[in-house]
Length: 132
Ligand code: ZN
Image 1: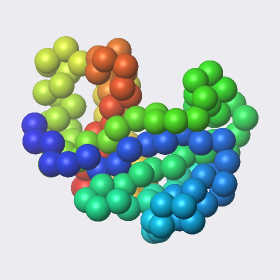
Image 2: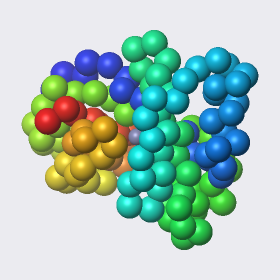
Image 3: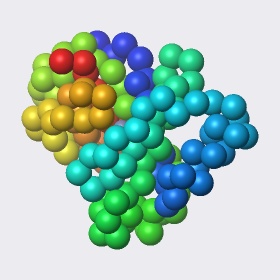
Image 4: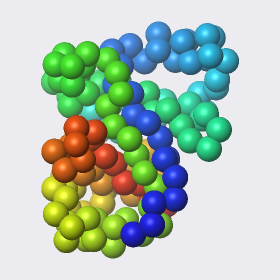
């Protein structure tokens, strides 16, 4: 497998609009893309070669809402861009990684995405993303 870059750092937030203001008004960055996925809405903030992915739950019992309730707002996952997500998942599985997604699914930006269990990656939820 080939990891080409950190595609984004996912940050779980309680209030997307308030959070966006910090990144735009305080840090001077720009939000370039927003979309709603399943039970969450996301806003991408480009920073050089990578992005921040601000994520707010759209339902009180969504995965992000549960995460924020349990652990508070903050870094939720790191997403690595790979050249071939299906073969990367197969290779990681063979090397003993526990996968959340055995098969890639549709993510933001029309990318294919898959999550690797944080128990396999020493406490950091790991996402693979791929342009397909
Ligand atoms: Zn992500």
